[in-house]
Amino acid sequence: MNNKIKKSVSAGLIICTLLLLATFTSCGGEKIKDINVVLIVIDTVRSDHLPFYGYKKNTAPFLDKLSKESVVFERAYAASSWTSPATASIFTSLYPFQHRLLMGLLAIRMAKQIDPNVIIHKIPEEIDTIAEIMKKAGFNTYAVTDNLNIGERQGFTQGFDKFENYMYNKAPAVNDRVKKWQKEMETKGKYFLYLHYMDPHAPYHRRAPWYVAQDERQADLIAAHDSEINYVDQHIEELYKQFKWDKNTLLIITADHGEGLWDHGKMGHGNSLYREEIQVPLMIRLPGEQVTRRVKVPVCTIDILPTVRDIVGLGKDKNNEGISLVPHIEGKEEDYKDRYLFSYLWKQVKKEVEFKSTLHDKYQFIFQKPKKKELFNLLGDPKETHNLFFKGGFKMAELLEDKFNDFMKKARKYKQQDTKVKLDKEKLDKLKSLGYIDNSN
Image 1 (cartoon, helix red, strand yellow):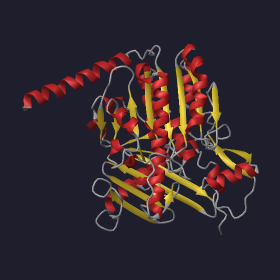
Image 2: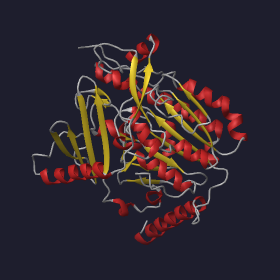
Image 3: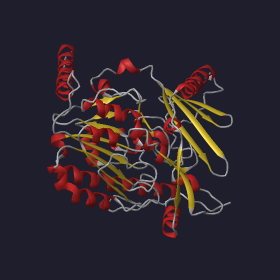
Image 4: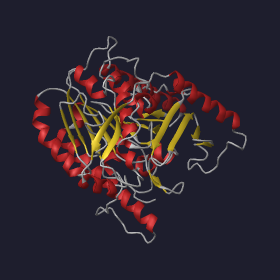
């Protein structure tokens, strides 16, 4: 194909994309009629374990197929590396140090003695969550979550007409509940549906037919984890086809955080802000005609809420810290190269642990309290094995640290709200099986 034809085809694709977006967002900000919004969060999935992000195994054949008719964000990052604060950031478009939900049931991890009376944080009632916003906009709102951290006690039920919260009941239970609501959902009008699948979370099950046993223990656990992704992929496909989400639905698929698979010596999440724990998939399928694009500019999961607002015609909200991704969908990536993204992790267990991260262009700076500092070139060193802080990177690290501290100092913050939860033996045993409680000294 000669250059003139290439340019013509490229221009044609851009024009088609812009025309399609124009049908969804009017200049006057009018709401779209009869369009549903479905937001799916798959717990504990890092982007580089998915085929459409280059993984060697086909862990998600359905999502891989869907990616070819969607907008895929190649560098999407979570606002934290564990479930409660990261998901609250998706719901509110605020960073954890703003909404102040810093610890969920993980507050009792590594406790020497298990106290059934647990203090956890919750989303402040004064913050409008994505469900409350959609409810006010005329959507019927539904949610099924399979993680105990995403429930009423933590403030996640605000704005939902119906909300079911399970504790790792697995993907079939999530789907069964949604299918029982199908008639109501499809007859009452447009709906917003939030689904939170838990399956890829430890303990990893060995799901047939995808699991292939490995001789070495770590490789075998990774194989099991990968088979769980296949398992949930199959169940997402089931609902997609049954509800015909290809027809009239804005579909967004992401993860709350990633998963350390011994990349830096540890398994799990909530341990650091390295890329494996915060880089997540983000795929948006627009309703109606297919719009396909790969976006290379870094974005954050706090951008999901502003994007939904934009596409359904609600306009901007000054209380949202994220930005609409519609310009990225339109191909205007260059306009956002100077953006700084933040992630934050804090927990108080045996001692206070705090991590801060700033992402900008190809660099990530990580500060671990009290004084550990690291700088990585994510494009040249995606596994983050070469700390540039003492190798000519001091000025860049200083800039990124200053950006975080300056933003954290000036950003709006809400008063932390706490709630007391009493856990029975059954829940405590379940938390132990999920790795949320460690009795070791």
